[in-house]
Image (cartoon, rainbow, N blue to C red):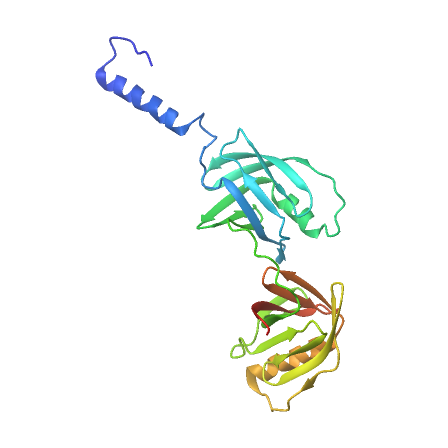
Length: 270
């Protein structure tokens, strides 16, 4: 950098420092190269309108290191591009670009993701995790780790962790955590614990529907949290067919009336 001969030494030093800083940044102000959000992120879930929707395994976004490059990703079925402007380490602005036009079976997640991943988003960066929030409080939860492979519906020991009633869900009653466990065998039999009594039943899987036959169980008197959990599971299993869905190590069963459960995968059954 050339400077006039008669500038004071202090001013020359200041100009030299400013030039060095600009070079270290790697480009014009506003692009924030090396932004902490840059990289490939795997979508875990969306939360909007008081409802959380689990992401399909293919949903992801690659945020570029600077605004001169496009973001790319997958909404859950269709791929997309977008232009990202880094306002600060805690805010980005997304302008959607192009998208593929494949016919998709389930468009609920894709539509919601596309709607949220646009405009100004605040950024909450944590170790191996990123949360993008919209102005209305909706959020996109992302992880640096790829999603775990789906556990098999059969041969897996499923531990009931929460119960659903329509749009709301709650953990199993206090004092009953870890007590309701069931396994569906490849031969079509189901067995386990309802929370207090052990049970067995015939089970049938047809596509994404799971049906339980009449339950045969032991006859211990069950009170308190374990008894409450057992009564709810007995009613739920009788409401077959149930719609089932596995995402990673999590199983969701939903009855026609909206009640259901979420269970976590344990070790494979012997």
